[in-house]
Image (cartoon, rainbow, N blue to C red; front, side, top):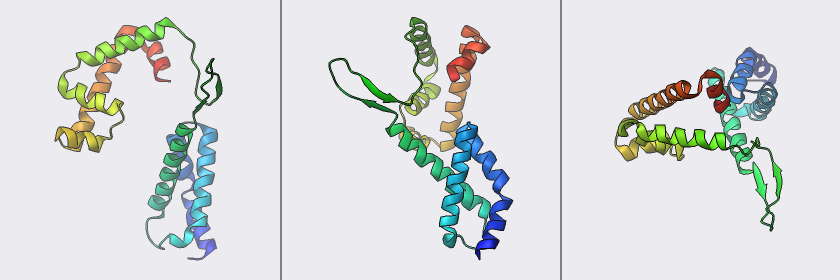
Length: 177
């Protein structure tokens, strides 16, 4: 496949890639950066693309992997701390919040609501919060992957409904942001 054919095929999926980037990043500027990074990688490695195969899937994989790698990189460099007597924070790209007892109370209420969940929902949910992947949870609990995903979904939904009752719709949206 020559360069002009590759460009023509790439342009067919340009709209899809931009939408996919926006879905991943949820930010128009980050989505544009992700789209450009994907295009750069795709053109750089176009010799690895097999003609007449699923280009949309190939480009989506490139975009998804680029997004994941950037997310991991940002997470590692999110905070840089220096241990001095005053513990100055040199740089932080994370959002800072004010010190409010109200947030502490909300966290305690959330923990109490999690503890109220029955074990089949609570255990996979807590493992997911601790950072275990769905596959790892399924292996540990000796259950099918679909069952684990379903239980975590149900736990989230129950917690969300309970918090909506306690705090109202607007506050719940603020907490999710």
